[in-house]
Image (tube, rainbow, N blue to C red; front, top):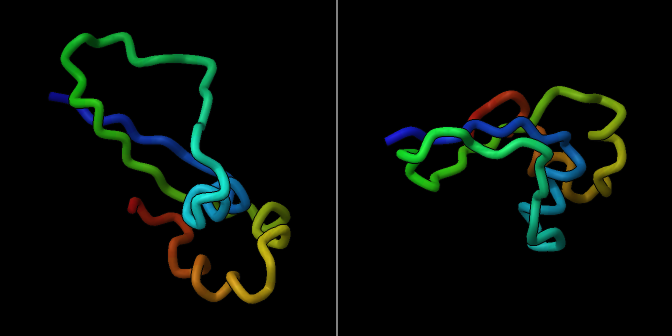
Length: 69
């Protein structure tokens, strides 16, 4: 079984983490039939996108930079 690894911009990672965004639509889908339907996401280190996160949540999400969670 294979898992999928997805990179997300910090602002979208925040929206998903807070439950404000429910669906992430991607252009490509997995080609393999035997993938486990398990998706791992990590936050890219995009400073401009990170600055869009409200100040009260920035400390909470700063520890997720570049880490799979």
